[in-house]
Length: 368
Ligand code: IPM
Ligand code: MG
Image (cartoon, rainbow, N blue to C red):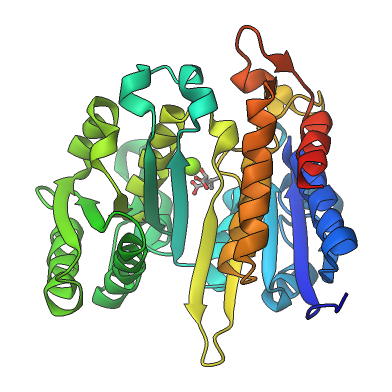
């Protein structure tokens, strides 16, 4: 068989359950290398709390430059109680935010799909969630996460003041809205844009810019505007009304956690953080499960690797142009769920409880 182009994948397992779930992704990448003659070149580095412990910084320059050179970054998770009291700039999360910001990964795609096998794992009624397929597009490099001024400063009377700034510019809004409209065209052609235009100027600008872009370039796509608090409510009341939701960094953070529970478990949801394509069509991208480091279950071998494995599926699709391979991988996940295999987080009566690595192995056996 002919070997395809060499492609660099940087694994950043991070903290908590990160290393356990990324280990399963590594097995899958190796399987594709061995069995499908795909020549992925894997490298692995420390990031987050583990990097702080070894190097005194959540991400070293060396690792950052490696990330800059990699076509695909697979991140596990960062953070945990061990590092909670570190000074702000040393916190594990700073590594993640630096990668997002400096690699300009402005569009965060968070699909929430309710697998039919897991309808009962959701806390919502089956008829509300079965068949659910939403794509949340979260702006990832702007808004209150990065706005200046920021900080904590002393004020009069011995009090202190915490400051963060929420800002958006026209181009920051339109480039992420464009991603949402383009995705909608390949799905059910509907975009819901969420902000708080009733109380925030930046929200008003968001709404106006999305509306203007729609009128200029995307009239064929159905667009509605929704206040973010209403969206939170509608996601529980009738989530199937949504196709693509586009929203800012902070609302996207919250709404995607909420949407994940419609699918049964945070352990199932993948994500892709994409940058702009350069003139040669190349794009930087980082893929990660939306769950965190889950320190309470770390090291026990019970974490669900499916979110990470599906994140690699998104990498195959969005970065590596390997749609067929992504289909095979997603099908293998479905097959394993059909067989009744479950990690603890999605366990229900009559199913077979399995460990992190046994879940990875089972998915690989379905790939064969
Ligand atoms: C997420 C996480 C991160 C965020 C944290 C770990 C910094 O919650 O990816 O949703 O707030 O963006
Ligand atoms: Mg979050």
